[in-house]
Structures are given as C-alpha cells and as structure tokens.
Amino acid sequence: MKKWTWILGLTAAVVIGVMLWTPNVRIQTDEELGMAMLRAGGEAEPRVPLADLTPGLEWDTVHTFGGYTGIDEIEDEIGARISRPGLGFLLGSGFVQEGGRLLVFTMNGSPVRASLIPPVLTRISGANSTWHSDVEVDGGAEVSFHHPAEDS
Image (cartoon, rainbow, N blue to C red; front, top):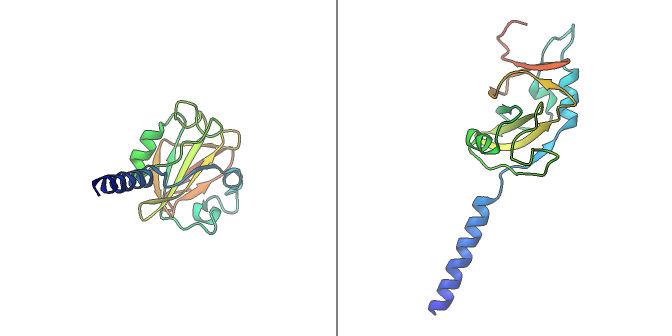
C-alpha cells in the first residue's frame, strides 16, 4: 500500500510541476501586425488605436520590450512564463533580437498573445513600456506609441 501511495504522490508532483512549468503563451513572429503598424497613421489620421490593428484579440494591456531584453526580465514584468523558442525569435542567450520588439498582450493580468515584430519590418521607438488598450500607434519608418491625450 505504501508503494502505491508513493507512486501516486510522485505522479501528482510531476503533473503539477509540468502545469507550473508550461508557458502561458508562445512567442510568434507577427509580420502582419508589424506591417499594419508601418501603415498606421498618415496625414488624414495621424494615429490609429492599436486595438484597431489587433481585431478579434481581447486585451487590456500591452507590454513592449526592445532588443537585448532578457526573457527572465520579460517574465518578471508580465508575471507569467512565455515560451523560449529557437533562434528565429530570440538570440540563443534568451534575449529579444537587436532592433526587434516583443509585444505581450494581456487581459486581466494574463498573457493572451506574444507578438515578435521583426527588426526588418519596422522600428518601434521607446524603451520597455506598458500601455493600456487605448494606446495609439503612429506609423511610418519609426513606429511610436502614444496615449490618446498626447498632442499629435
């Protein structure tokens, strides 16, 4: 009987460990979002809500991370684990690519999407930041984020 109790306890510990170790969200290269941000804005409408560029995605906060931001720093900031994919997304040392931007969208504090914007698509200005769902995007050669109340 003790042997079965021990085996069941070990199995439960492994299952719980796997559940805790499993990432909440996987990083995906998001060329579509990068291109939409490049095209955002213009003379008629200088800024576009980021929410308009992410149709069908429910989120209330987006965290932006720039080149050489470590994966541990990202996970600490968002309070959740994210996947650690291969070299196409992160440098081998676990950092966001130089010139790239990682956007982690969250809803009620839980990550719902992690979009890597490749450096060849666009440059996003500004340091690591957290924005609410009303953030606006000013597109062009260097994309920037703005609070709606800021002057154009």
